[in-house]
Image 1 (cartoon, rainbow, N blue to C red):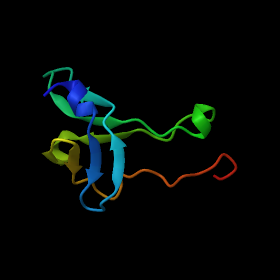
Image 2: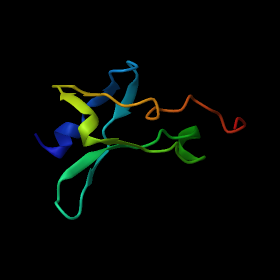
Image 3: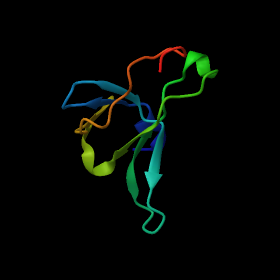
Image 4: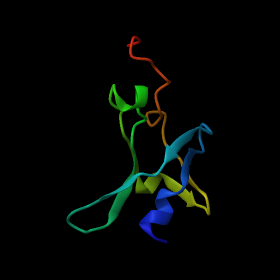
Length: 90
């Protein structure tokens, strides 16, 4: 499997059933050159004019299964996308 193939997959949290988005990047340990997790970039706010939401980093040990079109993760309640907020909401 290549990094490109991994980045085409959707990430689903199996504890909540929530679709977290697509894999955008991998994080590596510089000492061992091993993969430590996957990174999902935050969603754009107002087409990117107001920045992005927080990025999500999911540790490699929380990945349960890598399927043909989906990555199943068992992430705790702290790993979730924020509800859609507009620029006038805080």
